[in-house]
Length: 127
Image (tube, rainbow, N blue to C red):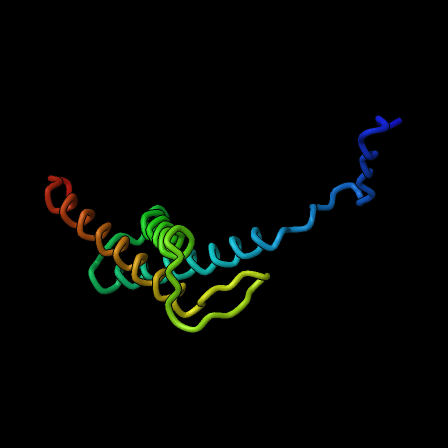
């Protein structure tokens, strides 16, 4: 029995094994994270082909983090919007600007990583 001053909690009537619904903020975060992931993987592969950078799976971590960090810093923290705006999941975003920022930061991360990787390989006696 519920306390008279507090309303009774509703029991969750969902079926066992189902996930709760995603909030709009989480949907937007997942969408933008997926976009950053794809952009960073493409940037890593491009730099690996053009500048003979690293190609292994762990080589994607730095560009992914750079892309997510750059998009988060410019889009969320500073509120910078580049290009036309649209509403997605109830939030106002600028997809052209978000993709451009993700590409720039992913390329910067991939280029920096390739430069360090080539320097370390050049200095190691086994290479």
